[in-house]
Amino acid sequence: MIIKATKISVPNFQSLVKRMLLMDSSVYINIDQENTYSNVYIPSKDVVKSYSVQTPDVFQFSSPIEKTIKMSFFSGQKLLSSIAYFDPHNLSADISVFEDGDELFADKITLSDGRLKIDLFCQDQSLGFTYLSEDQVGRALDKSSKEFSFTFPREDLIRIGSMLSMDQSELFQIYADSEGVHIKTEVFDLVVDDKVKFDEPGTEPKSTFKSFVSRIDKENYDVTVCSSKLILDSTESATKVAMNLAITE
Image 1 (tube, rainbow, N blue to C red):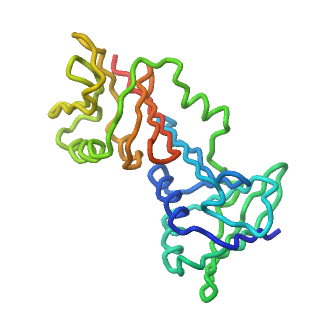
Image 2: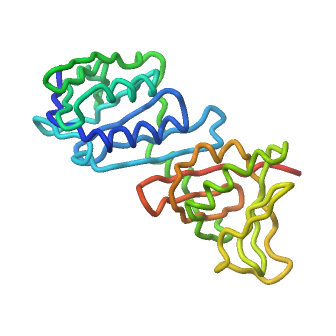
Image 3: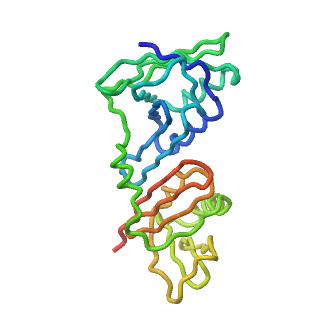
C-alpha cells in the first residue's frame, strides 16, 4: 500500500529528526491523523524523551490517516542528509506500508521534489521498533514524587553543557538553598533560578550523570525535581525529558 504525503514541511521534519538523534542514531517516528510523535529511551532506559508536533504541521496527506504509521530509519543522519538535497518548498513522499493489526509499518519512503527522487528503506520490523506506549510515557513523566521545581533557561543549559568537561567526575548535582537553585560539579557552582529559595540548610543534593545533558535540546525548560528523577518540560515545544537520578549511597 502507498500513502501519499503531498507536502512535507522540511524545517519541522528536520527538527523532529534532529531531536531524536540526540537519543539514538536510529530514528523512530509515529504518524497519526492528529500528531506526529516519537517516544524513545536510551539503551540503559535512564533517559526518556517524548516529542510531538501536529501532523498537518509536518505532513499533508492526499487522504486521511486511518491507522498509525510507524517509520524507523537505521541511520537518522542519512535521512537528514537526503532531505537536504531537495527543494524544501516542494518536498513530497510516497510511503510504502504494510498492515500489522491496527498499525501500518513503513518499509520504504520515496522522497521527491518534482525533479529528484530518492528511495530510503526503513529499518526491518524484525529488528524491533523502539518506542514507549502512552502508559509507559505517563509513568516515566509522572510527577507524584515532586520535591521542588524551577526554571532552567536555555543560556544556562548551553553554558553548563560547555563547563561539564572541566572536571573528570561523571556526575553533577542539583540543590536549592537561600540563594536559589544551583547546578554544581567539583569545580563550578551556578545559580540557575534565584526565585526558588529554601531556608538553610537547603535541599539534599540530587546527582545525575553529565552524559545525560547531551540528550537535551537547547531550549528553555520547567524542571521538576522528584525523589528519583528529573523531569524537563520545554516551554518552547512539546518536548519532555525524564532523567533518572544517580544512586550515590
